[in-house]
Image (cartoon, rainbow, N blue to C red; front, side):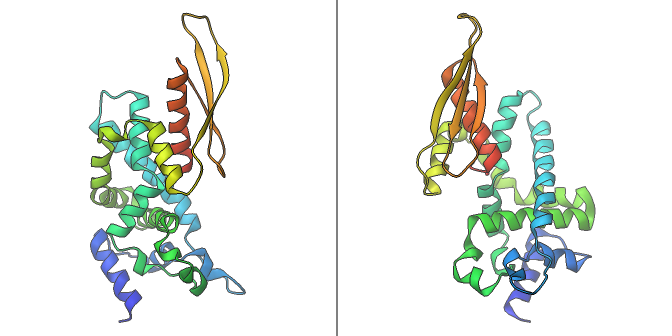
Length: 232
């Protein structure tokens, strides 16, 4: 048994799922770099697309059950803390996904095996593969076990300020600080509505509204985190 075969076996043990369709598992663990050149290789990008949707559904379902009285804004904050590239990468490291990945020599050389984005994407692909292999029940079993620590983190009061979290994420990516701009103000003086746009270099700006400028800035920061994975 070579090192990668052993890593795959260990991965299946840790996630508690033995794949019936081995091709699904192999595809979930194959980075797009393997298909460079003349070879046509089925990689994990389509499974990642599916897995992202499955993960969002499972996380939203769990939040609905755990917080029956929470408002939509609070639920969105918690969801952004649970479903993001950082959380997926942490889960990937915990389950030993990195050594099981199949990458090209060039991608491995530049550190892709330890990249947060690669690990996060591959983790979502794995969820998609589990879903196709055993349905939503199988994906839910994996989520409940693998995301237990992330669910606990979502209850941390320190995660309550989206502006702080967005700033920390931008700094972690080596980017300049987020820039907020007031786009508009509507409504009467006693009930104004502010629209704010936040920009982070290299990402699509996000807009949101609030009853105060500060509230709108927080909503815009949360929108950026939810959209681009900064929390994702």
